[in-house]
Amino acid sequence: MDHEADAYRTDLMTITRFVLNEQSRNPEARGDLTILLSHIVLGCKFVASAVNKAGLAKLIGLAGETNVQGEEQKKLDVLSNEVFVKALVSSGRTCILVSEEDEEATFVDPAMRGKYCVCFDPLDGSSNIDCGVSIGTIFGIYMIKDKENATLEEVLQPGKNMVAAGYCMYGSSCTLVLSTGNGVNGFTLDPSLGEFILTHPEIKVPKKGKIYSVNEGNAKNWDEPTAKYVEKCKYPTDGSSPKSLRYVGSMVADVHRTFLYGGIFLYPADKKSPNGKLRVLYEVFPMSYLMEQAGGQSFTGKGRALDIVPTKIHERSPIFLGSYDDVEEIKALYAAHAK
Image (cartoon, rainbow, N blue to C red):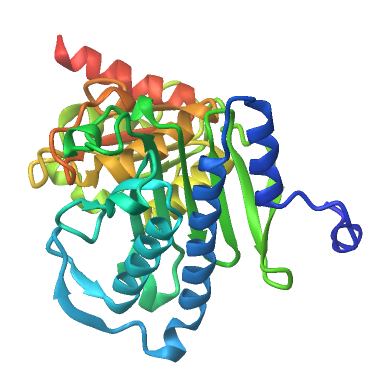
C-alpha cells in the first residue's frame, strides 16, 4: 500500500457516500436505513473519542451499578449506552431498542417512531478498558412490520431476518465493519477529517485459517466435540502444522482478526454456562450475519446460528464462527458425537 500516495487521495469513499450508493441500487428505498446508519456512525465517533480520553477523563472507574448480566458497569459503558440510545431515538427511524446494558427493551415514543428495531452492545469487552485492549460496539438492525403496535415479539426474530449489522472497533485505529446484505465492507476513522473512509472493500474471510481463538481456561468444562477440536488444532493427526492460539477476550477484536486472517472463534457451552455465554440478539446474530456475508460460517453446536429463534431479549447461545472449512470440521465432530 502506497501510504504517501494515499495521503493525497482526493476521491475518498466515505461511509456516508458508500451507504447512499447502496441506497441508489434499491429504487424503492426511501433513505430511512441511510439516516439510521448515519446516526449509528455518529454514536461510534462519539464513543471512539470518549474511549481515547477515558484514562484522562476518569471515565474508567466503576459506575457503582451492576447491569442485567451481573457485570459491574463501567462509567464508559453507561456513557456509551446513553449516547447510542439518544442517537437512535433522535434518528426518528427506530421503534424498539434492545441494549446489553438495559434489562428491558426501550419502546420509542410513538411521535418519534420509525420502522426499525436496533439490538446493540454499546461497549463489548469493557473489562479490557483499563489495560488499553481493543473494545467495540456491535449492532444488528431489523425491520418492524407495524411500528404503531410494535411488541417485544417482533424483536425476537431469527438473525437471518436482519437487514443490516456491523461493529465498530476502538483500538489502534477506529474501524467500522458493516453489511447491509450485500457483502461486508470495512471503514477506518480518519481523525483529521472526522470521517470513516472505505479501507477494506468487500471483505472475504479466507476459506481456511491457521488461528483458533478460545478461552482455554474453561477447557475442563468443555463438551467432547469442543475438546476434540481444540486438541486437533494443537496436535493435528494429518501431518499439517498446528494452529496458533490467539485470544484477546474482546469479541469484536477476536472476530475482526478472524475476518482478516481467517481461522475460527469459539465460545462453546460448558458445564458452567450450559447455554453458552454470548448473547444472541446483539453479539451472536450480528457477528454471524457478517461472517456469512463474508463467506464464512456460524454454528451453535446444534445448527446454523442465524436460524435461532430467541425467546427472550438477553438469551445466550454457544457460538463457533469463522472460515468455512474450519467450521465444517467442528460441525462434523458435533454430528459424530450426536450419533
